[in-house]
Each structure stands twice: as structure tokens, then as C-alpha cells.
Length: 139
Image 1: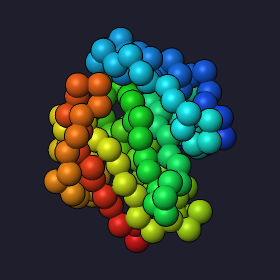
Image 2: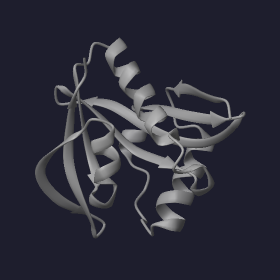
Image 3: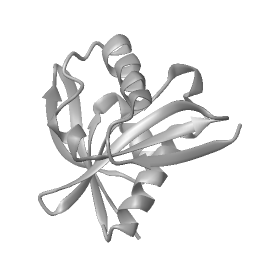
């Protein structure tokens, strides 16, 4: 499987569809899209030319934030999510960023820990789903 990533300055339709599928249809979130989408950078990951994963990143209050990481179910478990995170981190480094904050679903915490993120142990909820704030220093 050949993986490629692309960065977009506006939310592509393919990324919208992936997020609708994962967050709204599979996980039951109703408030998926927000004002951040208008100024965030959006990353799409393609497997053999098919869009299969996405995330967004943006600069907010002196820090970079990665969020809305979503991988279509048939493509999970083979490193695509980690590849998307690396692409976002690489882009942030190129912009001069030295650290990243994420607001992760608690259930996904082990994945993000494998990607090098450390929990701040600050928890909250988003639409009834427990989340944890995590950080990573970029080298």
C-alpha cells in the first residue's frame, strides 16, 4: 500500500466525508464542524490514491494543536493514523513550532502515547465523551 499525504488550506470534501463517517456515524458526535475549520490546515492521507484518513492542525494561543484525527475503519491498525500525525508534526516543525497539544478521546490515549504524547492529566468532556489534554515536544 502506497501512502501519500497532502496539506490543504481549506477543508476538502474528502476530509469532511471521513470525519462524518468516523465521528458522526460511528461515534455519534453531532457537532463535528466548527469555526476552526476555516483557518486550520487540513491533512489528507491517501492509500493507493484513495483518501482514508485526515486531521487538522492550527496555531492557537502560542501553541500548535492537532485534532480531528480520523481514519476509515478498514484502514485502521496499520500505521496510517501515526503517519498522519507525523505529517502534521513535520508541517508544524516547518512553521517553527516546537510543541503540540492535543485534546484526545480517553479511549485513544494509548495510540497517542505510542506517538510520543504525554498526558497532562487534565480531563474534560466533549459531547459526553471523556477527553484528555496531551502534549508532545517536537525535536
